Amino acid sequence: MPVINKTSYGQLVYCEKCGLYHFEFGNLNFNFTEEELVTFTTYINSIQGDYYNHVNKHTTNRRKILLPTRLKGFHFCLNTNELNEMKYLLNKNVTKPSFVKLNDIHYEFCNN
Image (tube, rainbow, N blue to C red):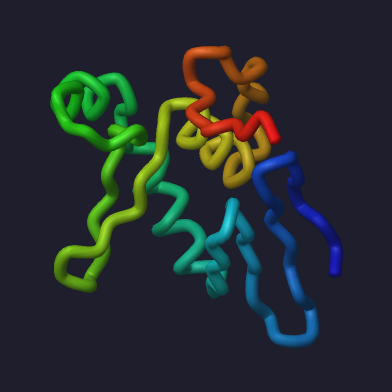
């Protein structure tokens, strides 16, 4: 399958056999027709990360950008870098995001 775009977060590939675009992002996997991919890309491009970071700044969530789904109570959670990376993967003409900032890394380390 030809890879359209790829980063450390995921990849966008097109399967000629099934006629679908396969979008892998972190632990998420989407299978889109061309029309669905265009709709999803338009939606993701419309999201203003700074706005959601401001609105949700007082929540306990580490990822402040909450994207609703059709399933009640289920959201995709992203931080600004993940949103920018998703935009980059979906758009060939978007500039690749810079490196992740240290304060955006929220992992618990074990000293064992």
